[in-house]
View: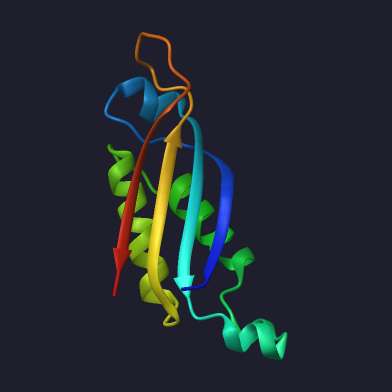
Length: 119
């Protein structure tokens, strides 16, 4: 199946279980992969025959920056659900939410969750 892929969207949000996360906030990176039949868009070269990735970016920005969740699992689940609800041609959606700087001791690049939801 064809895919629309948005990589490393960067937002600032207030998700977390620790008080400092919900007060100070932190960066979040989001990857989104949407499976859909893009043949018509490829042939017509018309925006109305595809899923507008600028709209997906704005949707992700709204959820990550304006809503507040304790878990990044909830952020990913909400975003995947909204995409499937809003875009009928989306058959499956994978969302990865990354916390590059979580307030936990140790040496690591980041922590992340990835969820896949389908119709």
